[in-house]
Image (cartoon, rainbow, N blue to C red; front, side, top):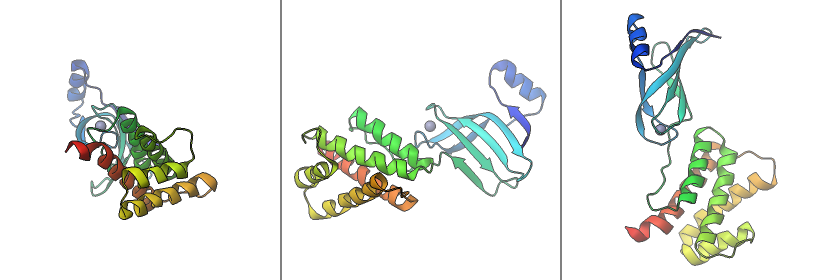
Length: 202
Ligand SMILES: [Zn+2]
């Protein structure tokens, strides 16, 4: 149960009302899980959990993504959802792949690791088709196309095969992907996308 819930709005009238009530904190600094940038975001509402004593802040970044932050009463520890963005899109990636990769990154930041790894499979399929693979094939053919045609050196094949295995487990069995494997899938996708779209323009 929340107590002392406050809505921290920011029009001149609202600011005056907050000033009258001696409220001062209306923004929060954190790394946004939506845009992966450091942000000085508005606090939309805040309150205190009467069981844990933690303060909860609902924040709104300029990028349009909300974030919820829980901070201990002594300010020593804090957690946030979605978590800070670890993965960043490349400037030269195609818009659809930016959107797809962002979905995977947001899923990962929201602890949806199985969903993130499945999107990573889709990213590889989309890259393969964008780079000339025939549409409508199965996933193995797309991975083979990438490792044989686009990134055809042995160490890349080994890494991309890891995504195939992680994605296969997520697709064909009810078996959840853990944090480490989802993170690995995203890192590999980031390398592939950078190599295909950013490296040639460097
Ligand atoms: Zn943001």
